[in-house]
Image 1 (cartoon, helix red, strand yellow):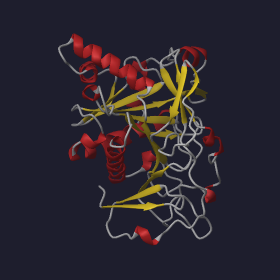
Image 2: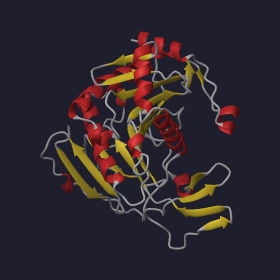
Image 3: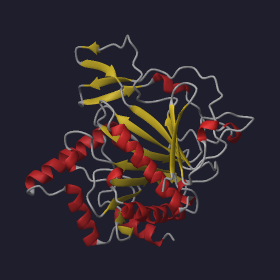
Image 4: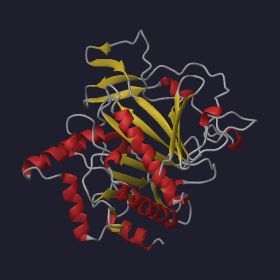
Length: 363
């Protein structure tokens, strides 16, 4: 659990927050000594009328750091030889504004408002943050102790609360990308948090389905009913405890996909009780170990927290974590080719029941 929270400003004005597990650290004695240029303006949102979706265009992200050597890692603690994004010589968990943000509150004064009569344009006002899970460059989330996982969860709760209160935020999305196969450009164990200015397409689809289910069932929650059905069937359940169940969805899109859901409907991470936060760590670490054990090597994955939207439809949300990998065999990846990329129609190579069985037997 977090014993001390300390916020500072980096040399370019971005916010950085230390979440310490023991009190007493004077983080202000370690200022950012770099001379950085001002942060870039925010992205541009362009409306696609053909699918009723907004697309962010963030050209400044082309120059973001790409697979630096370990002694030049911007997420490691700073040393005398190299000043990183974290000024202190050590840390537990750190969160800071992304230097190359997909969304921010820095709006160009000459922002255009349309490209054609059909394509309005607006600033991508929001927030993008980086979450460093540990100062150990060679570690991974799966090797963290349960107490550190709890610290990360508490930090995500803190950031979700603050980012949800920002003007114009529609949804807060914490996630982790792991592995170069996923497209990771920094190997240090870290995640990100996006505060979206619009409700993303996946969340919109989930809201439509949840609203339809509620209308047809007298107000029942869709995810709660799906979870209850999976618990009853049992065949796709991978593991569980008093407060959480981990299961492979019956219609999984990805070769290996697990959802971890609390047994109580809550909107977001801040709404989890202390007992639920404590119970999450051992179950999630167990599932991550099973992923790595499947093929005897680190599994590339995306870990995505689905939280309720901030505005209309919030009552329909049900917090859950979606963990999935594009690896379908020891030497094969699942590429999103024609059907998936062009049409959004997934074809899964692994039967979900078989995936669940393999994960149960992996350890």
